[in-house]
Length: 224
Image 1 (cartoon, rainbow, N blue to C red):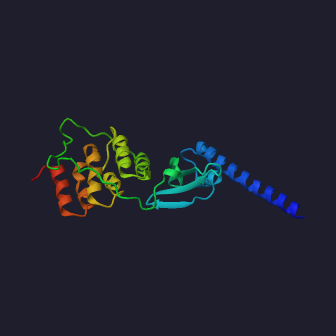
Image 2: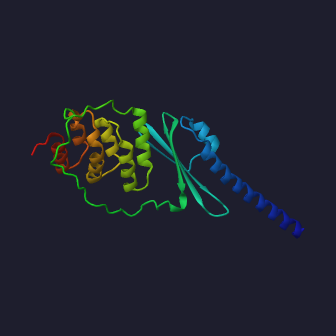
Image 3: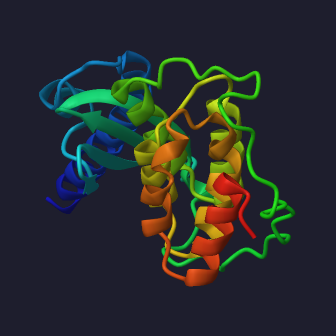
């Protein structure tokens, strides 16, 4: 009887282990099947219910943590939705995932010359059409999904490219951060591509300190 019990226990444990391995393999395969425009139901069918869920205005993010029972390797999967449809997906090695409250990185001072106004749209620059809301939301989600500030700003610099932005969109990108210094770093990247510079007061209102507001005012008007 004891031998039978041991055999059943071994078989049961093995079955659980094989199911776990199959589940992780299925998760890795599911990543390759995720497509832009998929519904939440389709993502749930592929990955199950999310381990964590976040939302901000129009966007929502689901986070999955999948672990390989053989190696202990974790995979983090982030799926972003806009209007309940997949707008962005990112996956990375979860073993490098930082603690919930990672140490604040120290960044070099912003070398931007705030006393020098940005070129006006009449100075050989004719702003084109502002980036669409859907394309902007994708860029916003990608920047926000990055874990570290320097990676976010680097991605934003690349994402801006030759696109044009509205002041309202600039304010939303700045809202990713809490402190004025970080918001001004975003503005440093986006401001040369702002099409409706006459609405710069929207940007000023998004800042907390008068000193920061004065810097922005000088950027757009050249006033002293």
